[in-house]
Amino acid sequence: MKIINFNIEHLDLIELEKGTICKQTLSTLNLDYAKSFIKDSKIIFVWGLQLIRQGVAQCWSIPTIYTEKNKLFVYKRTINFIKQYAKKLNIHRLQTPVNTENVKWIETLGFKKESTLKKITFDKKDEYLYVKFFDNDN
Image (cartoon, rainbow, N blue to C red; front, side):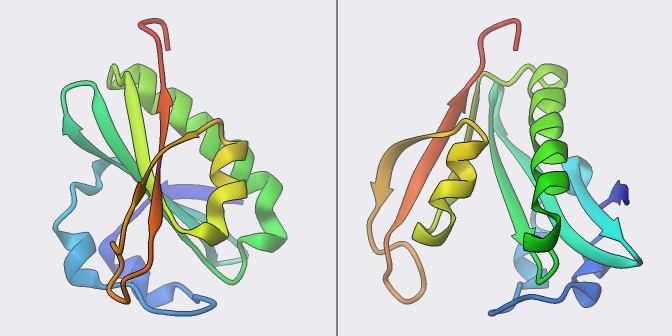
């Protein structure tokens, strides 16, 4: 397996279980802190981080049809990226919205539920805001 910098064109290579990813939405993000996890020439997972303000960032991910089969690798690398970028960018708060299907995953990464985002999706479903805090030593 290898990890490379994410490029917006990688979206054309991603096989999703359901739904689609909007290139226009992702192209508005700073992709300097985004990575594609690749195995056998297939993108198995994408992880990214967006700075909101000094010390605060939001992370995002794009699971693919290959993520579940590679979940241990994805977990270990995601944990490493979170630690690496928290330290490198002096982040004290990392947050992410999570749908009900991904609560277990985000909690295994050490995030805690902070609030409920009511009717936040296009189809008026709730999501949760999860957060992970880092001290000055990260």
